[in-house]
Length: 276
Image (cartoon, rainbow, N blue to C red; front, side, top):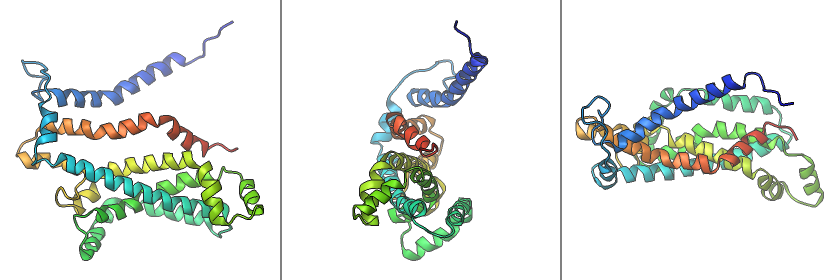
């Protein structure tokens, strides 16, 4: 006899409502990017599709859209890679070695990450200006590494903690050093978690706005969120069609990464939360 689970219909309705609520702004953004007039909802002409907005952002030299996109991809990729590499070493030390005060170290890292960006950006500007790094990639890469490092460390610590210590003991018996254990045993086993952490760190750095706004001046180092925000200043009015087209073009890499590696992301994050 088949029994209906109580509450399934309300949960389905809630899920559909949440899906529509999340996708509606994105759908409006896509439609506006293809619209000839951004006020098509209240105009008499209705919605007229065109590719002019996409052509403009890709061909107009004054917008520097491709420069912004290149800067974001390179800066976010390098920042995420460096942060995950440092976090992997720290997570191995905190979960496998006898270090006093492990909990204090973890909570200290967490407490440092709670400082708002606006309270740090003025000091960062003074430091980067003294180094002569304003409007360069290193001026953004170093703060981004520090910004995404706490998140990377906490995820990898929870993941490394679930890897059995018997693997370390067996490798030590076979004559492996700690470095060999990390490189040949722990990292291959923790590859899904490391990859998931890299994707999350990349997305966090890719979407960052305040540091990029203060520490960059022009298209040589400016990232895509700041570049899109300054489209208004370039034209004297708000070019909504171009802004939405640039936003769609910028969202595609993040959406593609999330959809393509969805299973690995979920596996990497949930396995660290399950014992065994």
